[in-house]
Length: 228
Ligand code: CTP
Ligand code: MG
Image (tube, rainbow, N blue to C red; front, side, top):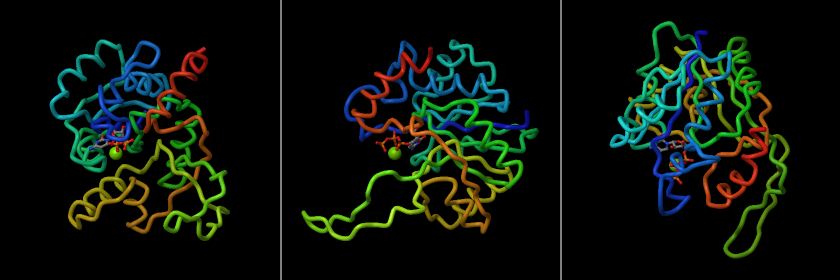
């Protein structure tokens, strides 16, 4: 298929703390990065996988991913100083036959193929789409050490990945962002700046971005049953 997924995996995991970078830590015997990539390798909607790794690890990551037998691995490129830079570098390695580009965090292994194909379908229809889940907690601003105003949670969503785009939209978005040098928190924001609408696709609460040691312990607890 004419679909590529870019997987930024060049972060340093500061919120996870000391030790091995989180994308290399083992979940059920495989590095987290490999766990995440397997889903896309087995997803019929996806044709190409492009990974952005820390500059000093590109060779080693590439060897390890070959060893894992990922059939769709197309390139391992050098990551950037920011997630946005890593995505931009990966985008340059997308083959010319590709029309739809997904971006998915290396550290979201609890992604299911039907969610991936849901995003791809929405991109084909609307040009851009992202998984997201409604906020369930009460939201309240903190003022000093006390609570202040309650924030209306109605209509608020937590953004997830994959986020997917027409290839030309994502390329233009990253080119513009680089020229203007205004960073964004994700690719949806970059594409919205071009004036395009981005479709919301219902995600899953399981699709967490492993960020903190607590996330890691939840992930290791769930993983064995997840893979049954
Ligand atoms: N990422 C990247 N290049 C960077 C920074 C982040 O490819 N320069 C990737 C991470 O590897 C991760 C994804 O972007 O797969 C989401 O980022 P995040 O969860 O913030 O990971 P880290 O940046 O590694 O963690 P932290 O922010 O706690 O340092
Ligand atoms: Mg980060």
